[in-house]
Image 1 (cartoon, rainbow, N blue to C red):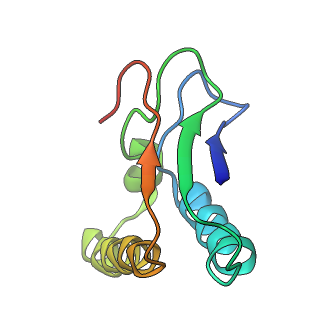
Image 2: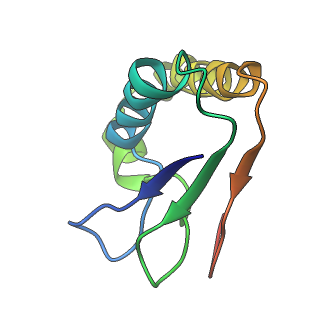
Length: 99
């Protein structure tokens, strides 16, 4: 079982920031996807305040041309599909708010 624990130490809550998505994709591609000994993946939060509070609005605000967000959203969708393609149970161990 692989455990992926979200924790942004600089913030009170975890958010889906551009940096977090990049880090999660790197972790998945480098350490999880091709490791056949991993039979399931559990996603959790190290924060007592909750799981993930949603998209990082500060990242979104910094993008001047909002049409540039379309490829970011498509990349996130493709990442979720890649996680699903591993063919193992993906479990979210959620405590507190999750958006």
